[in-house]
Length: 145
Length: 145
DNA sequence: TTAATAAAAGACAAAATAGTCTTGATTCTT
DNA sequence: AAGAATCAAGACTATTTTGTCTTTTATTAA
Image 1 (cartoon, protein in one colour):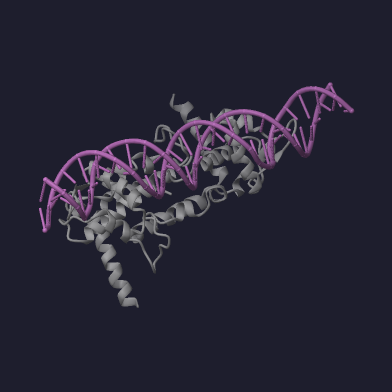
Image 2: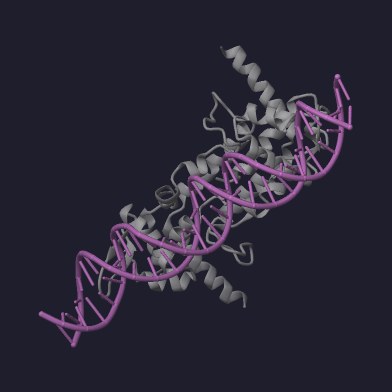
C-alpha cells in the first residue's frame, strides 16, 4: 500500500470537509460516521493534521474541525507529507537507501519517471479538486441509475 | 513503501543469483552477507519463494538456492505477486475497496495511468534485466572513479 | 456558575510486519 | 556409518501500525 491508512483517512476527511460549507466546524464524530471508520482513530489522525496546520479545531458545543485554508489551497501533497512524510513515496523501490543518478538501483531509470508523475499528481491535486470529483461522481451515479 | 521489505529482499536475492552462474547453488548465508541483511530473515523469504517455484533449493554440502527458471523467464511481477500479492500495488490510493470506472475514487482517473505504467514495468522487467543493469552499474562505477 | 459538548492528550491493546533462534530433515564427504 | 553442511519448519521476540478508551481542557448555553 502506497499511503498508510492514517494518511488515507486524513485525505478522505479533508475531502468531506471541503464538500461542506468550508468555514463551518464539523464534529469528528460526524466525519467518522460518514467515513465508516473508528471515531477514536480518526480523532488522532485529525489531531495530527491540526498540529500540522492543515486543519483547525474548536472545542465545545458547535465545535469540531475545519480546513485551515481554503480547499483549493491545500494540495494532496501537503496532507501526504504531513502524515506519511516524504520518504514514503520517494523511497527507492528496491529499498536502496540512496538511489539517484549517481548511485542508481537497477530499476532506477525506469522508475524515476513514475515517481515524477506521482509527485506531480500529488502536487497538482488539491482537496478542492478531489471534493469536486466526489460531487461529480454522486451526480453521475444518479444519472446512471 | 510500495513493496514490503520481504519483497525487496526477495527481489535483490534473485538478482544476485542471476548475476552468478545460474545453475549453481548459492548458500543463503552468502546472499545475506552480500545483501547485508539478516540471514534468518532472508531464509524465510527464500523458503517462501521456493514454495512459489521461483527458486529451487538443495540441502547439504554444496547446497543452497538457485533460480528455478532462467533469469530472463522470471519477471519482477512474478516475485512481487508471490510475496506481496497483487493487491499491494493495485489497491486504490484513496483506500476504496472497489475502485474502477463504475465506482471510482476521486483520484481514479488520474491514478489509473500510473498503475498501468507500474504494472507494465513490473511485467516488462525480468530478473535478468535487473542483473544486467547491476553489472552495468558496477562497470560504470569503475569507469567513473 | 453549572452542565453539556467537543477536541487534546496520552495510556493501553490488537494486529501486522520484521527479525531471531532452535530443532529437524537431507545430503555430501570421509 | 559418522560428522559436517545446508535448507525446512516452526516457535519466539521486537517493532510498527492500527485501533480503543479514559481523563483533561476549552467552550457554550441555560
